[in-house]
Length: 221
Image (cartoon, rainbow, N blue to C red; front, side, top):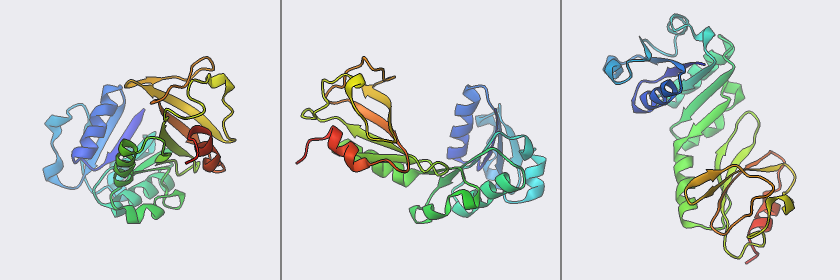
């Protein structure tokens, strides 16, 4: 897979290193010469240019990218980069970093963004998750499908604690994706049993009844 990343700061470089470790091809673009720390990610291709200018993106062979990532600290740059990637180069998938939560509403398909990643929202969700067993927390939203990734730590008095997954009737448009138990992710199967303290990661579609999900997993009161 070929990935073009706008922003060669600490976030962009970290993403690049992770992708390269999985044998993907990565190009990093940044207009600041001070960001050209090539020795830190020597396996990547580096381009010193403005990621919002078409000639720079053409030079980066953006049309060959499978995914582009707007990872700069400027929301305007991430939006323009995503829009150009989608409309001018037909990139199949665009991912954009949201720095200011007030700008989240713009990071959608109208700006060419398939997936918006809001670090402040994720950190807030992690704080809420850390202090609230039994609370259903939205970790992440998929802009294209409008589905949500939800997390809940199963309380000891949940009515489904000790129940085989094959006997649990989930609300419509809800799927259990992963169980995290003792720090280890488990792929759910019908024969697995839910246990108190399990961290459940669920995918809920746009029409999912999250109130019914909360009622299923957490006792009233």
